[in-house]
Image 1 (spheres, rainbow, N blue to C red):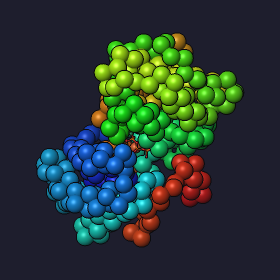
Image 2 (tube, rainbow, N blue to C red; image 1 turned 45 degrees about the vertical axis):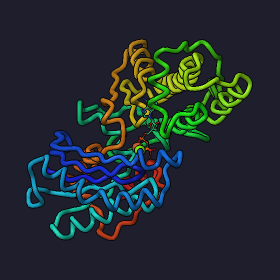
Image 3 (cartoon, rainbow, N blue to C red; image 1 turned 90 degrees about the horizontal axis):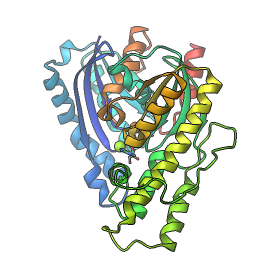
Image 4 (cartoon, rainbow, N blue to C red; image 1 turned 180 degrees about the vertical axis):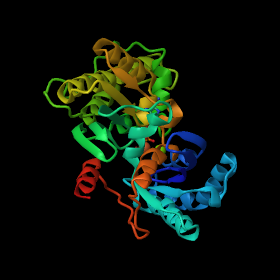
Length: 343
Ligand code: ATP
Ligand code: MG
Ligand code: FE
């Protein structure tokens, strides 16, 4: 099945053409990062406007790069949620219009469901598996028993991992979103230089908390102010903060592997680009003798190709969406399980 997928949940307008939920013929991502950097974060109204400007050219580019046109397609997929309501509406409305005009089935996909299955575009994973999704809005552990069958084992009780990276980056004077820059500077830093807290490490749950860690970095900086962007301690702080995040993510993932009995692990979402996290997860997988899947960085970050994996499955099963479907700003994965179980 040849699908066109559209993503517009936050600050990336993306379109992709994917065959059989497996082969990516094109994946175009137009990022708005530069526009929002000026404001230190994503401005929802600006995001919607930019999506409107970008969506048609991005779709055209994806089709052209794939060497296909509308009559070749068998379906259209779009992110239905979660995300910024106005931003979601642009991609979803475009997908509805394209599906209606070309008499194609439409399927609304959960953005996190897309992240979960991004690695399938490189190497399929057998069910069940444990998935750690670490992104701008999520730090969640799921047991995945199949498409549409998700059980939340743990989640952040405050900030998401990516949010923590971006907030700490802001404290360090980096432009938004600074997660990747922390990663780059940490390469030259000593992860043991500052002993930042490891929140909830021993609470026995699979939950995360990152807001206290961010405050610990703030307190440290107030006590020992940086002299400027060339301060020698900057890489040490980056490496020490990153080590604290990784320690917690690895420990909780390890606990969830035990609880769930899974022998396969998927790590996904923008923070899965982090080099230290990739290294530590590889170490964990080695130590436990389990199979590890982390998509290559472009597939960890937001893209539309990842949506085509679950979309292809749902359309093959005849589970298309109504053209009247609504964007869902909040849409926990567990509620998908409830819906699919009811069907
Ligand atoms: P969600 O997927 O929860 O809706 P989102 O789509 O905004 O949120 P993603 O695009 O998946 O999030 O991920 C973006 C996040 O990943 C940002 O917080 C960014 O700083 C972080 N990130 C990207 N690269 C790295 C890196 N190398 N190290 C740490 N964080 C990173
Ligand atoms: Mg983004
Ligand atoms: Fe995302």
